[in-house]
Length: 139
Image (cartoon, rainbow, N blue to C red; front, top):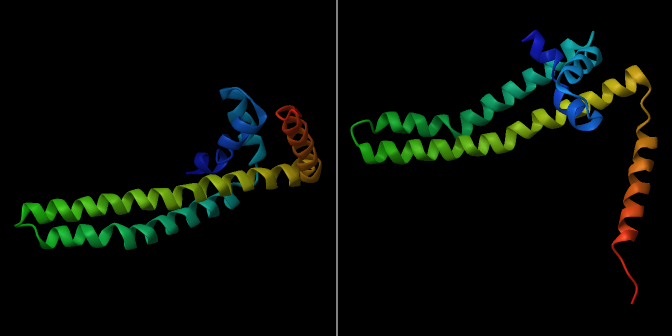
């Protein structure tokens, strides 16, 4: 669990800094040094949200399948509905972990490296303005 807490920023580091696999691991470990507790709280929140969503969208159907154990058609129906519920839990809850990991990455960059988000937003806005002008032609 400690290693997972230290490597929570792997995906943002890989996507935003264009590093190789070894460099990504080292960069993530360096960023999360002395901050494993904060990432543990992110994982804890994710876990409780996943359990609560599963309790609402999966477990009732699984319980109903157990009640109809003698009727195979009803068991199949309730288990299928449970799978649909699990699909919705995945769609709703997993992005929370990715978003919070990315926000945690930016927070660590701001705190440890004085990363200026306003400068980055200005660069992205200027690049978007340049690319938007490329596709238009006046006739």
